[in-house]
Amino acid sequence: MTTSTDIETTPSAWIGCLACYNNGRLVGAWFDAETADTVTLADVHDGANHVRRDCEEMWVLDHENIPTKGEMSPSEAAEWGRVIVSVPERDRPALCAWVASGDYIAEGAGDIPSVNDFEERYAGHWDSFRDYAVDFAEDIGLLNDAPETLATYFDWDAWARDLAMDYTTVAAGGGCGVYVFRAL
Image (cartoon, rainbow, N blue to C red; front, side, top):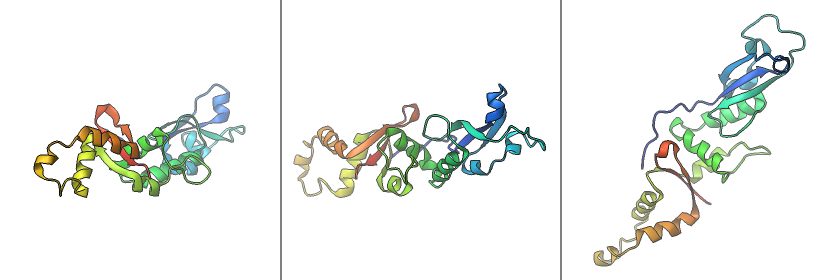
């Protein structure tokens, strides 16, 4: 099994003032997504004590390390942020890959992934699915009772290809292996 590289995994959200945006001014800042629902208009206006009267609504116009596209409300960004940071940092890229695959389980009425289902399905980060399959075969003792002369003729590629039907794999960033997820 491979290990993740050191990459930034903290979800963040760029929250802007909609009234200012609609008037042609880009006013906002980056915040931790986990606490996006606690951001105030004064925070967005860089701590200004006086916010214009027509400034009433904020919106997440950009985000990083949240595996969904497009804009969202600060409360939705906070939901995503809390889910993502609830997973160990080393597994956050895998969670994002699981969501990006489209083959994930969402909680409630939205698109927020179920962490329990992620933890149950995630089988690790591997150099290839074949590497996972060989390790899995050793773990379950697939060829333990087979004579060694017979075991040398075992078709690992065919077995891994058949086993892959019960899994979802997602390429890890930078061509560094695959994330493997059980299809339960």
